[in-house]
Amino acid sequence: METIGRRRWAIPEGYIPSESAFSDRALLSHETACILNAGQRDANVAITIYFADREPVGPYRVRVGAARTLHLRFDDLTDPQPVPRDTDYASVFESDLPIIVQHTRLDSRRAELALLSTVAYAEG
Amino acid sequence: METIGRRRWAIPEGYIPSESAFSDRALLSHETACILNAGQRDANVAITIYFADREPVGPYRVRVGAARTLHLRFDDLTDPQPVPRDTDYASVFESDLPIIVQHTRLDSRRAELALLSTVAYAEG
Amino acid sequence: METIGRRRWAIPEGYIPSESAFSDRALLSHETACILNAGQRDANVAITIYFADREPVGPYRVRVGAARTLHLRFDDLTDPQPVPRDTDYASVFESDLPIIVQHTRLDSRRAELALLSTVAYAEG
Amino acid sequence: METIGRRRWAIPEGYIPSESAFSDRALLSHETACILNAGQRDANVAITIYFADREPVGPYRVRVGAARTLHLRFDDLTDPQPVPRDTDYASVFESDLPIIVQHTRLDSRRAELALLSTVAYAEG
Image (tube, rainbow over all chains, first blue to last red; front, side, top):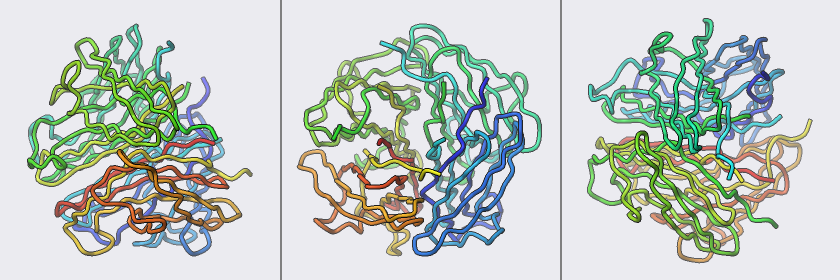
């Protein structure tokens, strides 16, 4: 059976609030790209970050193991440089093997949580 | 008219918080795969759960009756083993007949509810 | 230019909480199917509601005017019968012309709002 | 490599609450169309707003620079006229180049935030 997924994904929404009502890592405001590689070989993924008024940054490189999921927090990306807080961004994922990408934000600027999620836009 | 739906679905995001501000089952933090079988025969669905750092678990097997919907809570899956709490996971659904899958999380770690939902990724 | 949209849509998630912290109609817990008809003729839409353990109900019939949007609240459906509260359901939309359907829930069981939304599953 | 995206997008859900618990612009209730242009030329986008019971308004014209993202707030649209508050609307985006569109609402009618988001419906 062919591996499920696509090779190119895009997430137009991106925004990491600098503010959080909590210090627990799980409850800090953050954005996640949940990546599933259901195939039998490791996938190499190159991520480019786009901004409103400056040149794109990247590629950020991550590897998602065969038959593994990686819930990648954008605030964990550091190379080539951290993703700025309180700044509009967008992202494109290019993988050498089929993957599936879902976008999630946990927003804890206030004392209660807010969540959003969507399967990203796919091609290829 | 052909039955609406696809045979393969994927949900990269998965996370069941162990914490809840409530004990009422409806308000306990949970994740749901809402499955619709609009066809005229029962659908047999095999679910595989993927993790960040261990082998996948499954198949979990569920049957969705003809012209019925099943709102499957991941915390109700027990065979072959329960889905661990506070752990990143992802899931793939393979059905012998066309179905539609939508993913929802109700998060009640705090005293107010947070919700997310998205139609899952489809193929086949 | 061809009219944007599809003729068949499905929303597997459906659940109208009977409980609300508010009495204002806009803040009552509710589910909405936002329908856009960007075409030049009125669209006739037949909706079928599916349940976990009983026969489907429908069709509910709505008309969406040419170049109009209808944000249809499921708690406003009464003919052939109201959609039960606190009950899992799913829905299928069949239109004679291309439309686009987006699903939204506003949940006010607690004193703060929770929201979910997703573009529905499309075919045809 | 071909540019990622599509030329026509639709968002059936639209509603800007006039009420907000905050005066900070970032926390005011608002709806956003996050647009990504990952291509090498500027994209010209024409937006039409649809209503329940009056004629559509538009086009609103925005330009999204090459390799840039624009997180467009609907409450910033003024020409040909502002988008009314507390009113159901829907929107269609037509671009001369491939783009990706994601819809987000931040709702702060109550003292805590609620969020929704979905990748919009695409064609072309």
